[in-house]
Length: 512
Image (cartoon, rainbow, N blue to C red):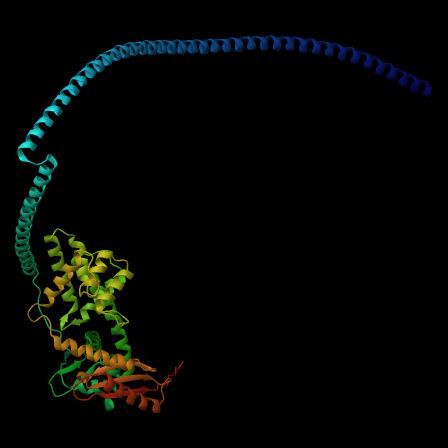
């Protein structure tokens, strides 16, 4: 019984599944048919829409093309009109040229006729002239060429006489005028430049508050004053003069370094050899800075610009140099102003003249002091630092060592002479004395092992500082003898010169 039920159940299920399959298949077919129909309808709609869009685009393109064609036609029409106008204009010009050509031909014919008439008249005139010349030759008894030569010679002689007379008168007048004008320019230049005249001395007086300081400056057994003299190269005279110490040296830079160093030492109160060397070195650096500042101030005061820094430094060094007792910087400033005035009076470049006047003596303050005249050395320094050629020539030629090639050069020479010729401006004896002391120092410095040389006591003593590692005690004695012998053989001097060779050994250690 159970088996029968199971079979019935399976059969019913199978029939139900078959019926469901048939129903589903029919539904799917209907749905597929509907989808195909809908797709066909939609495709037809899209097709119609695309066709309409294509038609619209075609119409737009057609419209644009018609506009473009119309514009081209308008431009072509305008071009044709312009060409027609040009053609009409050319036709008018051709007609005008033809008319003018006819007029030109007519003028040519008239000119040809007039030329024929002129030629005929010229021939007639030539015949008449020859007849007149023949008559004159018969009357004068000479040919026309002979008469012309005679006339020319007489006119030449007369012209030469008149010319020589005129030239002589002109030269004499020019000499008188030039002499008067030159005197006027020189006098006016001197009057317009008023400069104080001062003579440089070879000593400086250092004032102190009381005489007790003299003992501290001298130091125990004179070690402080010896250290100060060795460091500065200045003779320090401590005598009975109340409240004063005399610093003696021919070099103004050394005297100024010694003066400032003494001032700082006395003010500070600490005076001993190590402190002396430290202060002297510090003051020496300060003087170098001051030299540059003086050079800059001088160029600014004179309105001179774009100088090389080394030339500015050399100008500053002039403050501590003298020329025949005349301060070199003051002399150069005076020459610069004189040159500017004189160049302006002569119609030349006053700035160039002032520049050359300021630089004309820079050969007197070099660092290495070569064996050259100061004018030539100054010219070489100016060339080295790219100064103009006319300035270099003026510097080199102001003592006639080279030929003058510009008008600035004689102005520098004249103004240099004017500045040096002022009453009391120079002192020949001082200059020769300083030169002798310098030669003495250089002579000793030429020996091997010598580090420093100082001429002191007005040139009666020469102190020579040598390196202890290069010169022994025995060699120091021989060196003093050799220097004395060389000075005796090669130099002229009054009295006698004492040669002192100083050999110093230092032992240095540091406590850490």
